[in-house]
Amino acid sequence: MHNKLSPYQPTLRPSNSRALVPVRELHAGHRGSILRHFLQLNADDRHLRFGTQTPDEVIERYVDGLDFSHDTIFGIFDSQLNIVGLAHLAYLPSFKSNARAAEFGVSVLPEGRGKGFGTALLGRAAVHARNTRVETLFVHCLANNKAMMRLAKKAGMSVEFAYGDADAYLKLPPANPSTIVEEAANVQWADFDYALKENLKRSNDAWSWFLGKSFITR
Image 1 (cartoon, rainbow, N blue to C red):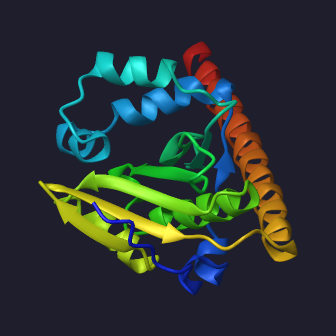
Image 2 (spheres, rainbow, N blue to C red):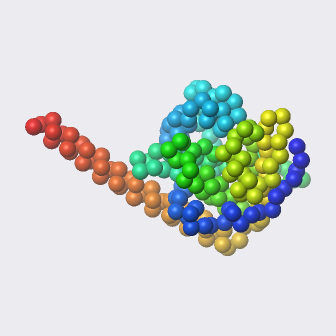
Image 3 (cartoon, rainbow, N blue to C red):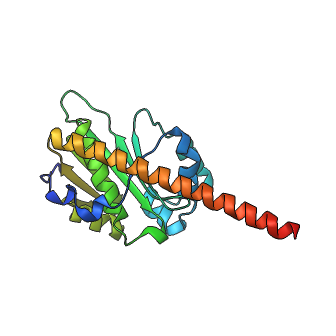
């Protein structure tokens, strides 16, 4: 494997299409929702995401072991507050002689595909990585993961193949005032979107309960 790094590409900068997708940073309280997201992936999708056959019990251990104080996890929620798209930004061990790096992993449920969710998650993760002094964004996946390969190449990543696996790299420039402002705006937009969906869901659930109870008492 070669340390061939691609320069940061403008495709990861804010765009109107990506800005329309609210990406929220998750915390330990979302662990149950994260587990439900992964369990909805079929066998083929799990194989592409984790690089191996992944039964439910392995996924459960993986989710239990997520360290929200060390890594950063992002999610895209649907109207029912289910996580339809998920990204894991895992910070790799750093040594004095090496630049700080982070590995990016992503999964999107079938109903969320073709909507730019993967691009939005990668863009959000890249900005956060820059703001946390990460210099290299890294992706490791199976070579036949076509969706991940398209996403990596679209982002301008340098992709290398070896023994059925693929490694993609993106060199990130340092943070600047615009990346700080962009992330702050992303946080506000995602929080607003989540609050709106939460209120609508509560309202719909209340009406469903009321109408159901009224129908039963007739």
